[in-house]
Length: 484
Ligand code: ADP
Image 1: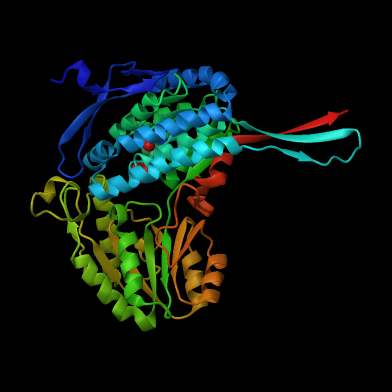
Image 2 (image 1 turned 90 degrees about the horizontal axis):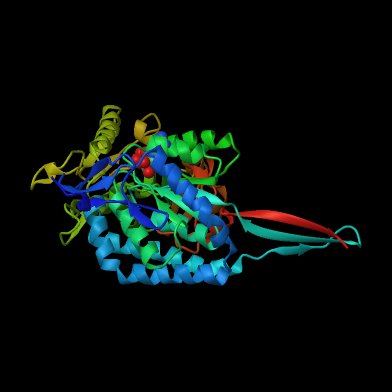
């Protein structure tokens, strides 16, 4: 049996604490099924304690100068950069992604701390000309109050800093529940906040195996003024409905179904390289992962050939091994979802060009590995054409005209990311303007950065994270009318 001290704890009111109930839950390595830790299993009481701590701290934190808040964020950035290698190893062990990808995520995550350390000092108000000569209008931007955040397992560190950094910069305090698959990553990030000296109660972490009761407390507790969530559209809707009762602010980063459009004037080899890189990033477990690859009929052959040749060289395995680019999926349910979509597509006439099976050799059966897969001849009646995949499957669809492909690309309830490959400036501009997606990459597979607004249209979400828009999510506008 593990001793009490081996349990990874929650961070509430500046202290590392076990769950009120003393319950714990295990965490596993998705590459080999090995248990890697036990974590405090918080419940409603713990969530409430954390909210009270954040409420208590709000007055002092929001009362500090922007310069003081900025200093803490700068310090957190430094500590995070100093611990980069350690953090990357924790992430690869718990989430499964290759070490190189973990390092990349840590840099991306740290960038938010740095960017919002600067932006804290630029929360400007306004003066507005008033209609009466004895009147003055002044606009203030104030923190919304205590924030509740829920984060996912696919980017288990950067999704935390992407929320916490702007919230703290704005003057908000926060309670956060990470995904049950990756609590150890969250704990490491909160150790950084502790080391940076962020005062007690300003940032609070509640870990739990069962997310629903914690989500319920977050969405219904009167002290919470804002919910920020990254995860599935289904859960986002549940939270938004509950939060509506008290008209809480809500930001949602939800699912996606990104089109990746390759026009006939682009280089099919270059486009295929980009498509492979972004499709298999994080083993397809990203909300901006291409879910429908539209290729012009006239260049389908060279595109498929290059795509297939690149996929055949991809190595699956533990993220600690050199040369591995395909990590595990998060759990068995994720494998089953991919299997169902591939089976459905093939049954309805799609061509399986490569992959299409769970990987079992070389001990991979101990983890959740699925071969990188290419499907040709995909049509709108197939599940994969509508459902988010969240796995390493690339469905290719052919098209003939610009109008046709724009209509097909927009024919989805999602609206997060879209990608376009073309050498024509006017075509690029028409697509950029016509695609109903929050992020459009033109010959660019990585249109994200701490300075840029990330977020979706339609059922992909509400609000933006990153950049100036990202801090606005944590601020309220107050108008002062002065009669003089
Ligand atoms: P995925 O299906 O990709 O795991 P989820 O939306 O289920 O996405 O998970 C994203 C986050 O939402 C995780 O932190 C998870 O614990 C949390 N979550 C899942 N279900 C609920 C719920 N009913 N209420 C609140 N949070 C939830």
